[in-house]
Image (tube, rainbow, N blue to C red):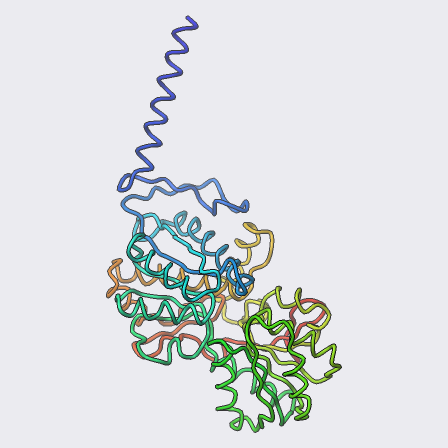
Length: 408
């Protein structure tokens, strides 16, 4: 009797192994368990998805100088694969996210983009964390005719041709600069500002926009200094700026440079207001700058202060995203996580609306996207506007007590 039971058990195991093998093969039925695979955010609900996976690629910086931004983007995209599959997938097929690290290096971003297109057969790409990498990938997706959702802010991403195949989710530099300079002029009542910026694409874009538009807000730029992303001391540039007697300094870049600037200003006893870019809207800046972060003012999306959201649909979507992210990663999402969240949801919405994964169908659907609510704002794209957001989608915040509050 014991031998007979053993034989039955072995047969059952063999059947189970065969079933798992069939489910794992391309083209067969796939059962996806709800929620992300990491972080504890899964539920017990399952949705049966069939057909070949819809592959969407992503290039983010999980290592290198931009990793403080890219890690939350990675978390979000990983999480959303489970969330979307639990909600029915994409056109009834499972979503497969292939997320690659560019190490904050545009050259590695190019390599990653070529792999996603030629090997992974991605039907769209979300790229990239930094503006230099985004611009590098843009040349490839434009040539291939493949949709790219940008999650970086330099103006040239959508201002300079070709733009037919690229859309963005952050507010571009021009929008963020308008938000910041309006506040400096109208709320702070200042007249003279100085600029300190990173020499990379993001920092240079912001600085150029400030120089171009400052007079519109009744502001005079009395100093304009730059630094390299890897610089470890900015006291020389700040000393020159101090000699010009500005009433405030506008620092445009992403960490670590802006955090270093805050610390160096404190060391030099430069007691003038520090206005940052939306590139420092993350906990990393506060951690790196320490006590020097206190009082820093910056433009950002409303995700950092959810109570500032007045649109009911945007509030609903944002609250749900925050809840899902906290359940999965035991922490709050920053604005960069929000950019990634909006990027994948805008793409999936376009695919569903267009009823196809064909690039041209996705392009048409994205260009027709209006009133799409996400944590970053209310997106309105068109054939000629691939930015989506406007100044009213942003708020000015102040770092107070190690967190963000609405700037007075």
